[in-house]
Image 1: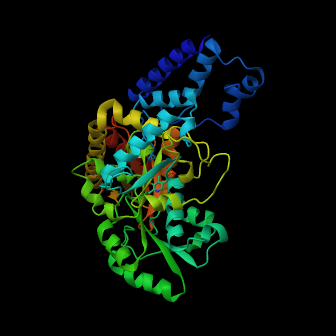
Image 2 (image 1 turned 180 degrees about the vertical axis):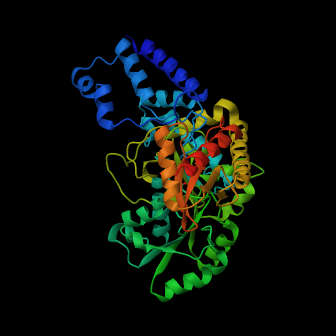
Length: 466
Ligand SMILES: *Cc1c(COP(=O)(O)O)cnc(C)c1O
C-alpha cells in the first residue's frame, strides 16, 4: 500500500474515532492491562517482522484507537490536555514527514518562520513587541512543554543574579520563592539546576494558595537574614489544582522594589490573554520578567507546545551559555537559530501545531472556546453547590472545578476509582485547602451541563452506595 492510501485510511479511522466518542457512545476511558495490550496489538511481532501497512495497518489503528483514552468524548473532564483542533493533527503529520528539526534555521526555515510568528503573536498578547520592531521588547522560544519552559525561565533568572553559576555552580545560596500551589516542575527545575528542590521557599498565601503580595517584603527580608539570595518569585496564572490566579500586579511591584525576577507560570492560564473579558485576571503580566504559556492546554494544540517569553531579549540569550562548534559558527544567516535558547538540541516544529490550531478558525474561535469553557465551569460550580452533600472548593476563574461529595478524603478517591473503572466519566482528583477534591478540567468544547448533571448523579449514587 502506498503512503497516500494508508494515510487516507488512517485519517478516516481518526474521524470515526472522534465522531464515535463525541456521540457519547462507549466509554471515555478503558484501561486494559499493559501485558494484554502488548499482546493484542502484536507489538513484538510487528517490530520483528514488519508489515504494518494496508489491511494490517487498518486493523492495528482500529485496535490502537479502541485502547486509547477518548479526549474527544464529552465526558473527558480529567486533565489540562487540549482536545486539539482536528486540523492541527495535519501539522503533526507535516512535521513528522518533513522532519525539519528547526532549532537551527538551515534545518527548517519554514518551521522557524512559523515559530517566530507564533512567538510574536504571543508577545503582542502580553503587551510586548518582539525583537526586530522599532522598540524591541520581549523575546521567546517554544519548548517541548511548560516544565522545560519553567526551567528555561529560572535559568535566565539565575543568570541575572549569579552570572557565573552556569560555569562554576552557584556562588550564593539561591532560593526561589513560590507557594504550596506552585507546579511541581518549579521544584524539579530547582533540583535540576543543582539548587536542591528545597530551595523553593513557600511564601505566605491565602487558604486557596494565592500568593500574599503584602507579606512578600517581610518574607524576602527573612530569607535574606538567613543568608539566602532570592533569585525569583514564581506567580501562578493560574494554579494547577484550583485554577486560581495570583494577583500579578502587586507581586510585580514587590519584586521591582526588591530587585527580584518575577516569573509568571501561565502554563494553563496565560491563554486568558486572548479574551478581553478574562484578561483582567492577568493584570500586570507585562511587568513580569518571564512568562510560561502552554499551547497544548487552552490553545487547542496537540502536545507538546510550550512557550517561554521574556521581557528582556538578552535575558533569554543568557539562559544557556553552551557552545557547540559544529552548530554555532559563522555562516550565512537569512533567518534565526533558536538552539542557543533551548534545552533541546533537536526540536520539532512546535510552532506549526499552534499555528494550525489558531489559523483554522482564527483566534476568535479559540477565544470563544476559552470563554465558553470558563463560563461552563462557573455554571457547573453553581450547579454542584446546589446538589445535596456536594461542596465546591472555590469559585472558578478558569475551566477548572474542584468539588467533593460528603464525608472523607478516602471517599473522594474511591469515587474517582469507581468512576474510572466504569469508564463513563473521566475526572481527576487533587489536594487543596488541606483536603482531597474531585477535579474537573473542562477542556472539551462539546461537554455541556447535561454531562455535568449526569456526573453529579453518578457521583451521588456511588457515594450513597458506600
Ligand atoms: C501544566 C502546568 C505545568 C507543566 O507544563 P507541561 O507542559 O505539562 O510540562 C507547569 N505549570 C503549570 C501551572 C501548569 O498548569
